[in-house]
Image (cartoon, rainbow, N blue to C red):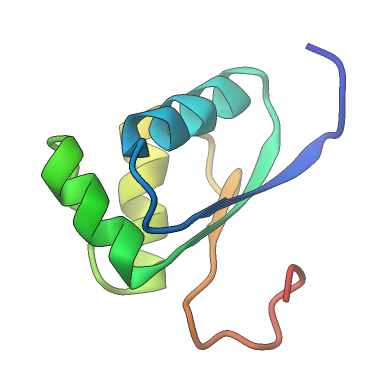
Length: 89
């Protein structure tokens, strides 16, 4: 895969949570750095459409997604909804 080494994935409350998870998995396997944001509605949709229950706090979510995808430490960076100073804000 060619393309940017750093990618931002932002999930909203729209249906299709499994596609967002699959994209995250593919980006990790291609050794991309992923900046991840998710809305509260998207967390509810994900819990409804998949067996994935994300922790509520960004740091816990980052640890969960790192383990879930097999990412290396720091490869996935999760930002909270109130993190107005994040690099992707």
